Image (tube, each protein chain N blue to C red):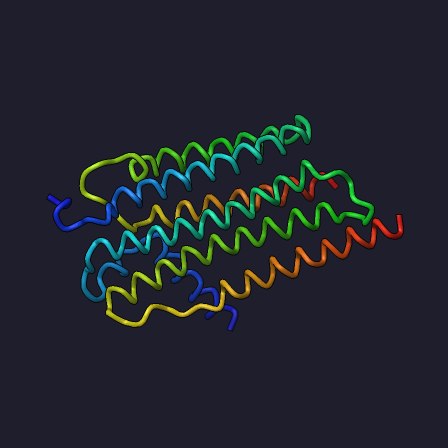
Length: 137
Length: 100
């Protein structure tokens, strides 16, 4: 079971870095579609980089917060979220490219909704934490 | 010529998207180096790693951001910038936690 998962992940990562197999399926589309797919990837990557920049800023510009290690928790959560967005951006680009080449439906994704809810929930809990600190302090 | 069948300036827009992305990556690299430097001389190695990762990525992606002529799409470069982003995220997490 563990071995199978490792094999699948390895296959996936190899296809990201060596997209020859991707180029061998289906037909080469109008290059404008590939360029549009690439721009979507880059926009997602910038979203991830913005989250990572937020985490790096939290780690060095926030003062020490009243809750123990809250600053580090915020920083690491943002950094990991940004990294996950970047990985998912590469995977989604590859799956979209494959679908375009094969003339299939573009891959549907719950990821944008999950990301929006996560960021919204995180912001809300920080608002609660700040208000609680203001009231008790 | 490609101009006749490409009224949407697609290669140009993609080039500008690459520039924005490399700019964002540069900001992330600067923040990482600053975090490492403020944590003291013990983190000089990680600061150097950040500079190395940044310069490698910029060098490899430079033609996508500035090149003219036939547009190139896809390829391992996309996975490479993704890897660079993940690398900075891990480096940042390591630096944030080592400060505890």
